[in-house]
Image (cartoon, rainbow, N blue to C red; front, side, top):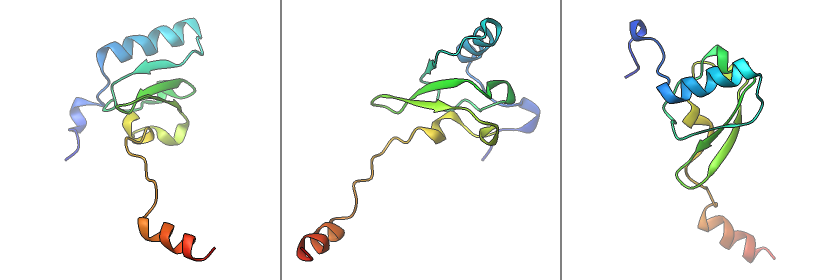
Length: 94
């Protein structure tokens, strides 16, 4: 279930302060955040965030197509290493 429209997009308060400071200073350093649930708003376009995925920080450059999505959608938390059946078939073919 999505957030009510009358509430507006959720942005963590401390993250919002960091965004305001970066825009005021025209700073292009990445903004480090653990707030994966914060919604990307148009004022974030052009900024770079380092989003924590539970293990490390993943750099995410915000473009216009990302507006309305969450920061966590662009920092995957799981690493897919392939299916075991594919490895066996590849080894047998050699």
